[in-house]
Image 1 (cartoon, rainbow, N blue to C red):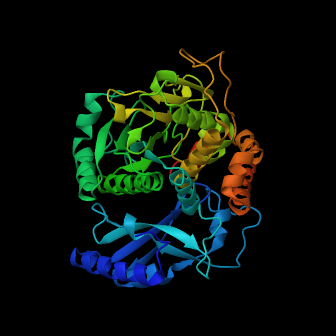
Image 2: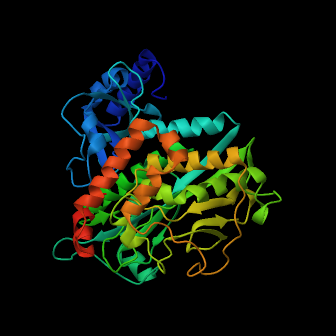
Image 3: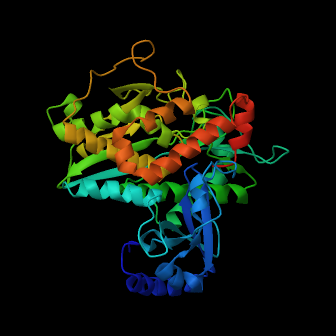
Length: 442
């Protein structure tokens, strides 16, 4: 049930959910949201308090809109005011790897029940609703990449080669327990494999609506962290954990649909794109420099976003081109056709990233944009580089009329404030110092 439902209906649904959770041994419910720095914040209530939380929300100070990754405050973040954090029961899950706990994503409202204009999840919901008003839907999925490390003595850690069987064998019990936990939480895992960097893994789940895909990405990450700790490992989703390494992406996959038909297939545009799908993707490509401030929001993001690392540092598109920021995937079946935004990483607030991409795609539809010529080879030397620093991406966001209008004055202002404050706070630090500062914040 959406948090847009009347309070009495939310409370009634929560009463039923609380009884079920209590019967399943749940004692506490986590209500989570993600701040503008990409850090997950939480409030918890006992299971018997879920009804009240669903009806009235729980207090959450608006100062979190100004929090930086290290818990310092951007200018303008003060001690005054309060919001209500309301759990969305449609996303309520018992946490298989944290016995006794359940989790639900939260939306933030003012004390009078009106939507908080700085709520990132409600921003993503508005963007999805704007698509629905046109008869369009998006299916989305966010890849989850992480690096596991052992304890201080290195025990419990098996490096192994990229994509190698040795690494899978070395972490077989860990990965099995992760799959079991995700299955118990009713998440459909599509694939799980060792990735390029030592100790790195990647997991993808079945696509869902845009807001639900962001919820799922968070739930997967929470589960990875919990299972990792149970195996004596630490999981990091930071963009970079080694200044010389490839780092963790948070690639966003999405496909545009109308009346049950995937518009990325069967059209007369490039590689079968319909005109609507082409205009949508052209809008995303046009706004990519500004979108980086939402999807690659950390100073550390720009250590990862470098040529030769297949991180998508170039403002171009191409079919199965893993160095292009926008990769077109035609798939082996019509329903599999989708596009991948490769330049995003796991420091992003997924609701800001998803909502921003939808807003950019809608603008492309409004303007009837067409894609530029495809980049079929290595973009180095032939395609425009995306912003190479957080400051440059933030400047692009400040200059974007499309994203500014979509975000609204308050949310845009708080995002810009956090980005500019983090750029200033980390100015002059070495790459190693940046990595150490953010390694376990995401």
